[in-house]
Amino acid sequence: MLTSDHHAIREAVRDFVKSEVEPIADRLDNEGAEIPHELVRKMAELGYFGLIFSPDYGGSGLDCLSMAIVTEELSRGWLSVGSVMTRMLITGTLIEANGTAEQKREWLPRLCSGEVLAAAAFTEPQAGSDAAAVRTRAQKNGNRYLVTGEKAWCTFANRANVLCTLVRTDPSQPKHKGLSILLVPKPGDAFDPPRLSGDPIPTIGYKGMNSYNVAFDNYEVPAENLLGLEEGKGFYQLMATYEYARIQTAARAVGVAQAALDAAIRYAQEREQFGQPIAKFQVIRHKLAHALTEIEAARQLTYHACMMKDTGKRCDLEAGMAKAFAAEMAERVTSECLQIFGGYGYSREFPAQRYWRDARVFRIFEGTSEIQYEVIARRMLDRGE
Ligand SMILES: Cc1cc2nc3c(=O)[nH]c(=O)nc-3n(C[C@H](O)[C@H](O)[C@H](O)COP(=O)(O)OP(=O)(O)OC[C@H]3O[C@@H](n4cnc5c(N)ncnc54)[C@H](O)[C@@H]3O)c2cc1C
Image (cartoon, rainbow, N blue to C red; front, side, top):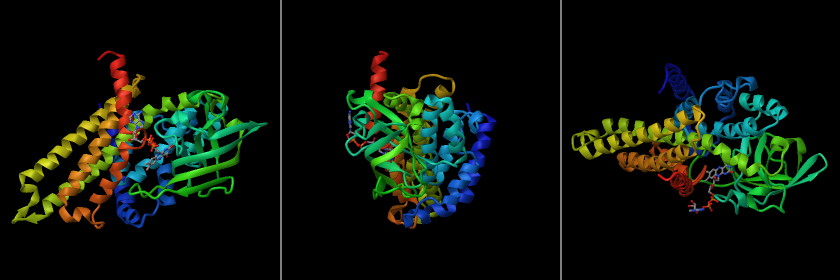
């Protein structure tokens, strides 16, 4: 149930998006330009990076539902804008749940304030869905680790001050047992070649953020940056953050689909063919009605997962269902909304194509749809439903 506070949060973010994001999103996407630093700074000032973290560490102490609402509205303006906070959410959640008292004091306030921007470096060229196949090696040498290996698809790596990195600390242990999470500092806005280098991967959408292949070559990291100061826990620590991350991704998908529908409704009421607005043709009206229905279904699944989370219940099943459904919904809805624009849907002069290109990524990142359905199936069959 949304409270008046939730509605007020939605209105405030909507105003921010209208004044700060909508006027620039299409132009920057067409130019392939990244989100301006100034916009990231404003989001940080508004507290968007610390929403769910404890006020003891500079967060707002809000519930998961508030986080989903903020995410949805930011993504409605531009997926990339709704995705900056994802990195602070993942890194902060990992630290809040697993960090030592000193690590929480050291990192959380700076993540919440945006002084430290984070990126998540889990995927490798040979280790995507199979995260336990990570090879990047972190070898302890006195009071530091030397990190060597390659990461793939590390989004925002160029802008981040810390890479939250899944590494192999014990190669003698099988797969997930020898993994740990290291908080790898780096200069913001740059890499540190030749020990730390990054190459952007050209993509079809999600243009406001670049994803990088990152190479570590004996890159030095203080040993005190090992999450929880305990080796061998990284895989389990990471799995436990997936509920938040998947809920946030479902909310991103709802936001992008809603933006596509908003634009399609406006166009269908203005565009005339055969002497009347195309919104009067039943087939177009039904496309819009279908889109609205699907978006609301995905939103309610997302809110349901939030409420489970907010009442302290395990919600990997609900988060997985919300993420899988919202991802597929966003692809269908943005495609049908593009169709309503006819030829103009294919033109860079209208945003319909941006929503469609951006929406395609939801079935891939934060766990592919195929992996989500495996998670859902496992839980469903385990509890005998
Ligand atoms: C734009 C973008 C941004 C990203 N940002 C980040 C980031 O910031 N940090 C990060 O660490 N990663 C990031 N990723 C990586 C993303 O999480 C991976 O792409 C994803 O986990 C899938 O891994 P993969 O690409 O290696 O595909 P693979 O795992 O190789 O999968 C290939 C195909 O096989 C299927 N498949 C694999 N295993 C199974 C199975 N057991 N059962 C059934 N089907 C299976 C998959 O569903 C998929 O269809 C990003 C990806 C993209 C595209």
